[in-house]
Image (cartoon, rainbow, N blue to C red; front, side, top):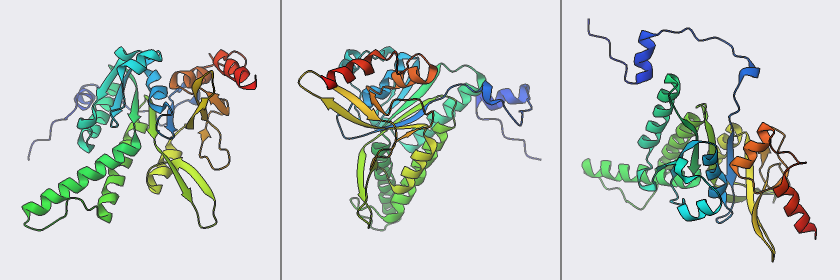
Length: 287
């Protein structure tokens, strides 16, 4: 009889030494607050900075597909950059992101992780990167087989493969007991009846998953006047904008909707009555 394969992760190895019987149920009251959100909007609306403030709460991993993290602006906006661990744009592949999920699962199972969350900037760029990687692999395979495949042409099945890969990463990160902040570009769609809808810029199949898996979906924009420029976000569905607040707690028009401030509202530290940032900007806009 062939020997049984050895466990490949530390968590699996430990499970052989310390077998456990998981409970079929858990109490809702015992659940820890985990925030899974999407920040989407046009370029320059401070999505990256808003999500990066998660680092003020603890160690985070940032998937920097857009190469958008800049230490100067982050420090300027009060982000603790020493808590940021980076997956660089050049390292973003399907395999690398699968490895990240496996590492999180392993560390969480052993109870020795100090990572509180993942910032994914952005799902739009990652989907495009995975599509390009699928095409590159297909071209290389064609060359090995002695057939011709144009390197600049993307086939329908290529998009299908990259959608599947992005869904696997999205679901894998969603299932971890850590915070998850995802950015996306903005996309304008119009149906045959002329109704315009603004939503995250990914394929329709990915849009459905993003909306279903997220607790909050914030449409980002900028408030600008002679005296200030500040980010704000819609957190409730208004007209053509796809938004969401599963906690039913955030201001509908939230000034500076950073992850840190969202966390403050959801943990009770911030309220409509004591949020000085929200109250001060509202007063300025009315004057």
